[in-house]
Each structure stands twice: as structure tokens, then as C-alpha cells.
Length: 379
Image 1 (cartoon, one colour):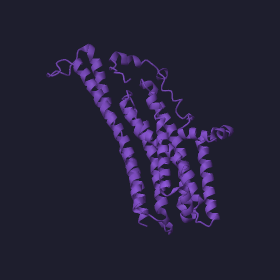
Image 2 (tube, helix red, strand yellow):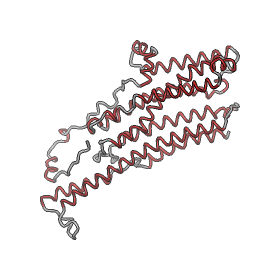
Image 3 (cartoon, helix red, strand yellow):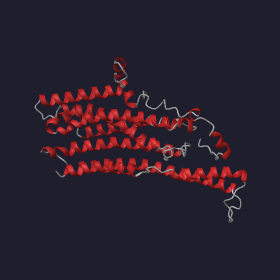
Image 4 (cartoon, one colour):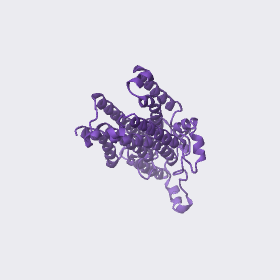
């Protein structure tokens, strides 16, 4: 719905001088900051296991996914820890204190999922997506309904394939203990459901949303006073989403390599290093795709608008290719000046990521997880 807007003639511009600025009005920001109360996929799953009734019974507005995470993580960690202690097996948190970061990270993932989805909702409100495109639903409802289930069922299937490759629950019980069986059959699917929710929201923010924005008719807001084409909100969201991934990778790095800091022996294999590096590179690829897509989108929109304005200028001037090509008839001179002012504004619009601050923040957050791994691994 990006409409072609011709420049305003000088006479019309002078009429605005007589209008009080308070009479013009502005953008209604009522939608920004309001609680995002829609259910995510994990909320729906939590309702299926009874957390919806508990959520409704509690005062305030506690999402079912929060209760699901608190109850399942709390119960499983207590049961598995108590069982291991009772049968004389080592408790994982005594073997590796950094393992406490696992339940903390899972709870943070549930919070991060809702936080990112809420912020994306605020981004669409701030960018006025519903007013700027004929198909706003593709941008407001950015997570395909099939994606979480596909990811979750795939992860659970791989988990059970690995379990039966070891001989099944009975063989695992005989080789290890009941805690291992509960871990494979109950805990892993629970952790997978939480990870799936964060993964799908993150993918939606960094991969799906930028691509759909690029392919939409929203266009770039060249009147943006910040000179960023109105894309600062989604650019900031991409950066914010990656910060969650950075925190998660640092936590994983500490779990895997941290015991050496406190003098505890902890097995680290080449496969461990390879998996960590693969996950890190994948995260870099996602944020790189988002940044490149937004940059390409702004660049193409700028070129398209400048070409349109250039064509308007050529129609307005006299003797376009001669010495006096800059002259225009008196009745067209105001329009020509307006076109040229708009060309200056469009040319001045920066392409995301536009500043050294944004670049430095992104590059630093990319380097931190790998740096933590390399430093701690050498201790």
C-alpha cells in the first residue's frame, strides 16, 4: 500500500504555517506498552495439561506457560535430585554447580519467548503495519501455526529414536537407574517443549518477519525523523532477540566448560566443541540474515523512490539535457523544489544497520559466546 506521494506545492506549504501544531494531531501510541495477552503455542500446550485452570484460579494474569515451566522444572529437578541422593548416586549440581544454569535458562527461555512476542506486537503497532499494507495478518501473525508442532515432534522423535537405540527404557534402567529413564521419557520432552517455544519465536523475529516485510507492500517511511526509514523498531527487536541467544550460549558454555574454573573435572569431547560451535555459527547466520534482509529492503526502496522522484523531476524541468535544464516554468517551480527536497530526504535515509553503535553492539554480541568458550576451555 506504499502510495506514490507527489511533492506539496509551495502555496500549499505556506497554508500550513497558519495551522497550530496542536490541531494536527499525531500518532496514537495507545497500543504500545499494553500487555500482550494472546496465548503462545506453549500456553496452549500448558492448558492441555491442566495449567489453564490453575492460571485462571490465580490472582492477576499469569500465563499458563509460566506455571507449566515452574511446576514441571521444579518437580522434575526435585524428584531426580532426591532420587539420585537417596540411592547414593552423585547429584548433578554437586558434580557441576554450573548445572544450576539449566533450570534458570529454561525459565528464562519461557519469559524470553513471551517478551519477544510482546515486543514484536509493539513493533507492529509502532510501525502502524495495519494501516500500511493490504495484508497485515502476514506481519502481525508471524509464527506459522504448524511450525512449533513440527519442531517439537521432530525433537521428541529424535529423542525416542536415541532412547531405543540404547535398548529402550528397560536397558537404560539396567545400565543406569530410574532417574535416567525419567530423564529420557519425561524430562527431555518437557525441556524440548520449552526450547521449541523460544526457538520458534526467535526464528519468527529474525528470519520470517524480515523476509515478509521485504516481500510486503509496507514500504519505507522516508518521513521518519530518525532517518532510519521507520525500521528502527524491528531492527532493535532483532538485536534484542539475539541478546537472549547470546545469554543462552554463554550459559551453555559455562555448563560445559565452567567446572574447570572451580577445579572440577568434567568431560569435554571433540563432539561437544563441534556442537557448540555449530550452534554458535547458526545463531550468527540468523542475525546476519535479518540484518542483510533489512539492509537490502531499505536499499531497494530508496533506489525505487529516488528513481520515481528523478522521473518526476525530468518531467518538470525545461530543456532537460541542455544548459538550462534546471529551469522550470513559474507554475511548476514550487513543485520542483518540493520534489528536490524529498529527494534530499530520501537520500539522507540511512540503511540499517546505519550507525557504528549498532554495528559494534552486534559484533560484540556475536564474539562474546565464542570468546567465553575459548577462554574457559583453556583454564
